[in-house]
Image (cartoon, rainbow, N blue to C red; front, side):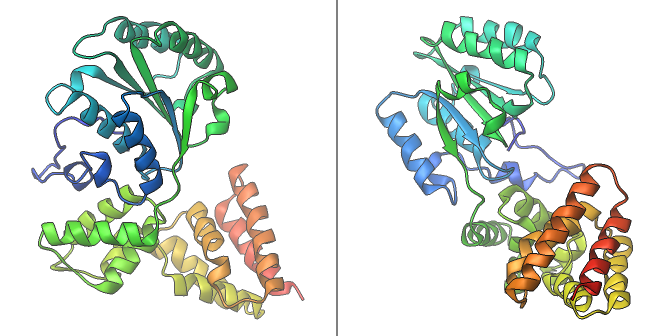
Length: 327
């Protein structure tokens, strides 16, 4: 998570935001990344923490792991003074590296080294990354760098070679469901099994999204069920996506288009979200291998055109039309 880990944030009504309230405070509390936690804990136990590079999609525990490392090394009372967090997407120029990071790295107190955590490091410009590489070399005796990114390929090789690289995988459905149930019990919220399944589906491996969706759904009524989750997440039900695709493959373009129109106008989904749900659900549909391959080809084509700026609805309707006309 990219938010600074200060005091728990609050909503306008004074309620704490649950992603901060239930953020794991130690490595052992992190769900779904057991192998990574074990390796990180071994560094701490041996008092030999190298520079670290965390890569993976949003909401899988990268920032939480960084703050947990600082807590375990410095203790709850001292970690904030030895931990500098910067978001490279907001402060991505070379001046940030030269000024803020160097200023922090030059001072060292209360421990053998201090930690600089650079979130979304793949947003740094090439010049800033080159400056960062030199800073990592210059202050390696009293500073450890933890870099977090979505795409490690966007980090220059000289930085990657100086770091122990950890690739965080999307969280398993079981890990997300367990955390959702744990928080629901702590908040005394009644959540149905179908509601948990819907939260897991909408999250797609992103724990932050699951927790935010749970909190939002909890405000809509006394029970968090499937209907409440899909309503607040603007997510299509899997059966709606499957129905739209099977209608198109059966040659009923009109019916498939009506379902798409409902998703875009009534549910409020963006075209990119429809594409994402189509892609992740292809192999869950009862399709022949040939039909699945045709669908994947059309999804890729529509996704590319939308990314290039084409009209979302036109491209999605074109996708359904191509499926309807294919033999």
